[in-house]
Image (tube, rainbow, N blue to C red):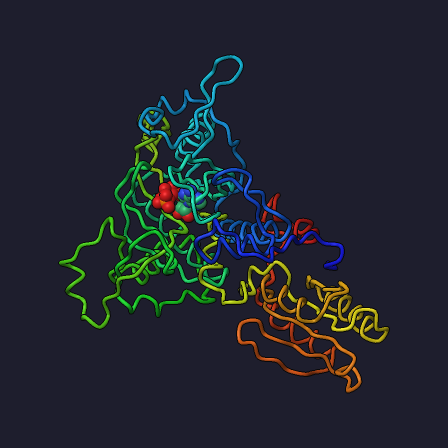
Length: 464
Ligand SMILES: Nc1ncnc2c1ncn2[C@@H]1O[C@H](COP(=O)(O)OP(=O)(O)OP(=O)(O)O)[C@@H](O)[C@H]1O
Ligand SMILES: [Mg+2]
């Protein structure tokens, strides 16, 4: 992409309404525009990041054996009356009446809809285990939408639902979700800690929230500092192997880590004092096992091995995809702007031409641009007729992890400058060497194109 042809409405002034860094930076970097309270348009740069996160979520869910689909945003109230949640849910639910006077709602979550799909089509234990998921907009009429996309009213969420014959199988599904979530957040450059949580209106006993530590987080968290040393890394995992998934759960949840809702000072105080941490965190996901809470009232049964009907054991598992864009920025920014982790950056590298219109500099930039594209990389070339200072400020603000600076002086010596946004360190090298180095940096971050149907297949990657 050439910046002169892109739509990047960068703001010079800091918007007064934004209280936290991620909200300010998303507005300033032209990623989002508020449409109404808690509802945002995703401008091109923000949309790119959102799609990258969506893609990572798809890849990791499919890897875990879960099946993508898509349910609508609008749902019929009748299903929610069956589960008893139509009245229970409260004013967060946006209730709508259509022209036939039917009660509808904008889905805040999808347990009822998926249970209805399941009971209509699945009749035998032989069809289990089954985990279906989608990534779709949700609406919750939050009393206090704030912090931009972090607490929106309309937000983009992955929600997955497992259907199993026994509690044991359903807990394996729970563990698979925990493992896949650890992988997902690490690929996004984040550490999200599973913490014991409260189940709220979804219901159930077993539940963990995933929290990213950040001063601006809305949840108070209490944890054993040893937990932050745990990394999932690039270990291989067989998602069908119950013992392996259970071992990961134990590894990541055996140390004390709880939100204020479940915090127990007596247990916490048994940890050596120097390891006790009280901090704040952003909830970026939650997993639940809730047994037959929905399958019982809604009649979602299968015929068991003995021919008798059994209510299926279920769980639901969510990732806040749009909130994650803000959470990543909270975790990774400085005074000058965003610092994208390589796994989610909207463009892989920026090219800054210090002397637009200079034949040699222009030609060198064009050559770099096509060489990066030939490597399958996605560069952003600042080809505007602007001063160097302004170009650097824009690049720093939008946070591309790598910048190549091209100017007539360097070119005389056959070099360009490669700068890391994170460290600020620069290195001079031949243009070809810069291209090689960037390609190498991104090698581990290439998506597994073709594994995800249909939203994130190969063609989807190419048009990005
Ligand atoms: N209003 C919102 N805006 C953006 N993301 C949200 C919002 N509410 C929930 N999410 C995201 O969706 C994920 C799954 O939804 P879940 O039902 O667990 O939310 P929740 O526990 O009600 O969230 P919270 O406690 O923050 O209100 C959450 O972990 C969070 O990342
Ligand atoms: Mg939650």
